[in-house]
Image (tube, rainbow, N blue to C red; front, side, top):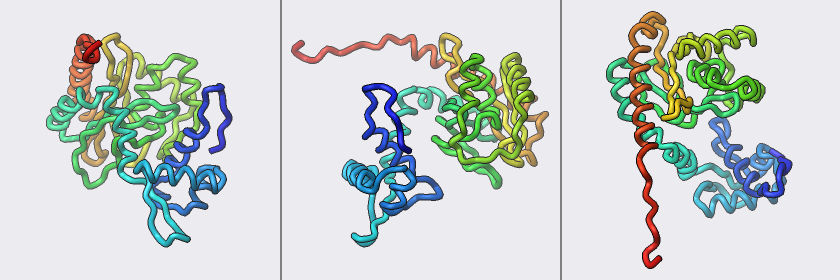
Amino acid sequence: MPRKATTPDFIEALARGLDVITAFSADRPEMSLSQVAQTAGLARPTARRILLTLQELGYVRSSGDPGALRYALTPRVLDLGVAYVRSTGLWEVARPHMERLVARTGESCSAARLDGGDIVYVARVAVPKIVTLAVQIGTRFPAPATSLGKVLLAALGPGELAAALGEPSRAGVVPARNLPDEQLAAELREVRARGWALADEELAPGIRSVSVPLRDGEGRVIAALNVNAHAAETSVEHLVGHHLPLLLQTAGEIGTDLARLAAVPHATLEPSGA
C-alpha cells in the first residue's frame, strides 16, 4: 500500500517489494500484472519492475502467454519466514519438548508470538484430526480470540496493550465470538494473575485451547505455548485438569533450555591472518 517515509533512511523501493509479496494470498495465489498493481496500490510500471526483480531472485514465477502473464510466489519465499524462526532459536529448543507433550496429550501443540493485534505461529507439532484449524508456521489469528493471544496480551504494559488492541487485525479471520472490551480487560487481568489462559470456541466453533507463557532467562514473556483440542473430544475440565499441568511443565523446561542457551559464551572467530 502507498507508504510515507517516516525517516530519511526509509527505503521506499524495499517497502514496495514487500507489499508485492504480501499482496498474494490463499484467495489470490496467481495474479496478472494489473491485479498485482491494484492489490499492492502501485503503478503498473512499478509493479512490473518489482515482479521482474523478484522473479530474477527466485521469489516469483510467471506462466502463460507473454501478453497475459500470471504471477505467483515460489516456495523460496518461505526462506524469509524460516529465517525469522531460526534466528530466534526457539524452534530448535522447543521442538523436542513439544513433541513429548504431544505424545502425552494426544493433542496438537503450538507456539506463537504477538504482531500488533494478531498472533503469528512460530512453531507447531500437529496431530491429525478430522476437525481442526488450518494452522501452520506463519498463520495469524486475532489475538483476543485465542488463548495464545490472551497470554501475550496479558504480558504487555498498559500502553503496549492499548497499542496492540488498537491495530486492526491482518489475519483475515472473523472470530466466532468477540469479547466486549470490559470483559476482555477483566479476563486479561485474570490471566496475568493465574499465569494461563483458556479460549473456549471463541476463535472457531468446536475449538478450545489452553496456553501458558514462554519466558527467557530474565523472566520476560517471549512467546506463548498452547495445547488445542476439539470440543467434542476434550472437555474444559480435562483440558485444564490434565493437559494444563503438562503444558506448564513443558513451558518451564523450554524456558530453562532457552536460559542455558543464552548463557553459553559465543566465541568470535578472527579472520585468518588478522
